[in-house]
Image (cartoon, rainbow, N blue to C red):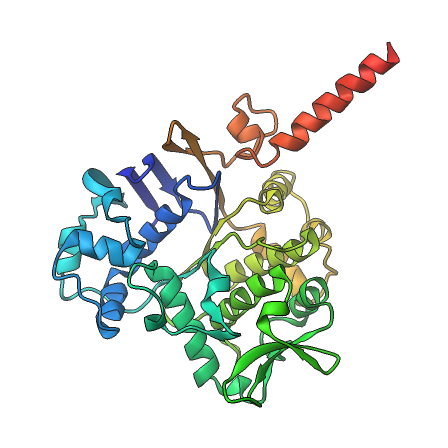
Length: 383
């Protein structure tokens, strides 16, 4: 899939998305970003989705609205009506027909790491698919089930070490994550009690899930999702998965930790994934802006490494070289009177007269206003 156009889906009045190697969605809360991301997964993975729902005992009795409630969540069946039109690479996507097909591909192609990821851990252990309410969004249930299976079936974690784990991620990324998020603590699998659980080991003291910091609770499920995408043993990618979505990766994290995640995004692209990030952090767009202007300037990969605060080595230099060859797209979910129009702001031109572009979809609007007010105040003080 290269292009997706949407008309009248929930609050989204219109959207015309051409995907890059990294595509970034920005916009206010409840502006439809999650709905559109779930739609992309539905289009690419409908065979795997219906198979998974049936495997866990769910049945929509060939009723489209019941299916929408099972997939998007309770009360969301009304987002798709007779005026909704979905076009994928110039071909209409009709949900009724897609649901009735029997010969569709069933392998998962699209991994979505949801913003609700902290709720996937219950007492420090991933919840199974059927532990959720019927009306909870499918993508949360599926992600949680993936984490559970990863921990229960992988021999790599049988000795208890989850992070840092040699062979999972490059050492440069592991060190950055360890320093900025875990501060030297280790993530371990505790089997000593009557029930397995994930704990933080701080100098030999084991801390349960509920006493971790917010950033740590949010990041550990994200970390395990990344493990699934970065298999050990020299494999570049995970089986059939070609698309990765990470919703709000910045939740609970300091800017230094977000910088470590930016390197992870580039590594996912280097491995061949198409990456979509939904964010409220200006740092993500600042990286995209920097890469685009470094390309225009014909800059060397070492200049990008300076942006990422990485030292040139056998891992980082190819990473930067690959990043400078990739394509980037940015879309702003502009909301007015409960109606959303999705705008292409990919140029991220600070001189553009359209504030949606120059203010990075509103993410730099406050800092711009502060600069203007302070500059005016200083000018008046000098009069």
